[in-house]
Image (cartoon, rainbow, N blue to C red; front, side, top):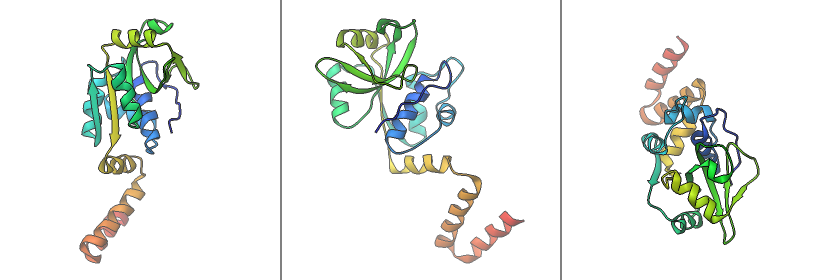
Length: 189
């Protein structure tokens, strides 16, 4: 289930959207961690760079620039929450490229979570949404985490002592007490 989060910086819409999607996948993460992971700058970050950085971190990510509304609908039916780029002024806001999370497409509306304008779902007519999406290059980012990516995300959020405990458990299981004793001496001085 997706939970709305406000973007923490004026240019961090992509990071806030990634945060919402990851939390929907069961991986709670702070926006600041996402910003560092995806290489956010004061001007923001593109969906293309985000795809590359998330892939490097273990997520399975697809970026598309040629999808139709039917492709978005199919993605939602398959259980994904696509992050789409839009030009905001077409949707009644000031002019800016922006990222939002697609939640539902019905015959009457496209429903999204907007990290700049929430926490309620925003509903747009098909023509307005498609126009805003086309003006932003029809960009779509679809992600899910592999088991390895989930482990990396969990480890990234762990404190140093928890990582040391996990590592010592691994050493004991893999190499026996001798190696774990060496780790203990290293940690305790």
